[in-house]
Amino acid sequence: MKKILFIAMIGISLYANDKASTNLSDELRALLSQEMQFIKSGMDDMLYAIVSNDYKTLGETAKKIQHSYILKQEIKPEQKQEINQKLSTKFMEFDHEFHETAQDLASFAEFEDRENVMKSYSSMINQCVRCHESFATHRFTNFESE
Ligand code: HEC
Image (cartoon, rainbow, N blue to C red; front, side, top):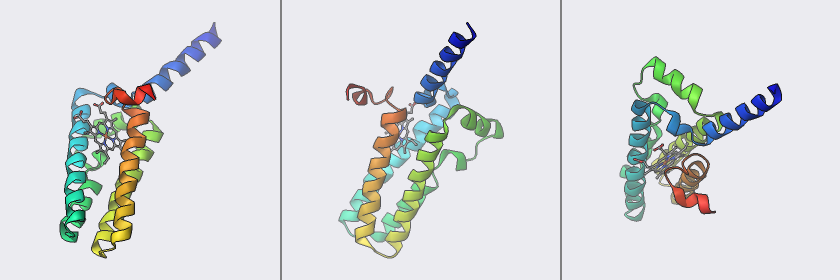
């Protein structure tokens, strides 16, 4: 009996990790949504900056994305705790790496290093996909048919 309960608990916690963001309080989930909308429009702005050779806008936008990290916003200590409890380590790792790539892109923009700007931009797209297919299939249901 104990064993069955244990297995059931593992099942629940795996499921909980997969749908991490749906477990968040409405307030935090709204913040996450806001961050996502912000980085989506940031990606658009950066694309336009790249194709118009505008390194100034590119660098500024990359920096804004870098700092959009949900944990760096002015959230209450209880909310920080909630994030740490409810979002898996993998999620945090993906989020961290994503913001680091934005930071790299900002530096490459400063040096007007087009080749590495392109590489970072493309890595960021891969990082959106990687996180969505692991943690946001409830929002992007097309991933489920793969
Ligand atoms: C670390 C994980 C992670 C990364 C990286 C990430 N996302 Fe998301 N994204 C999510 C999660 C989780 C949701 C679903 C939130 C929810 O529960 O509604 C989401 C939802 C969204 C939404 C829908 C927001 C809404 O209002 O419903 C957009 C748009 C979005 N992401 C864009 C992006 C783009 C563009 C990138 C890359 C440039 C990106 N995301 C990178 C985790 C991530």
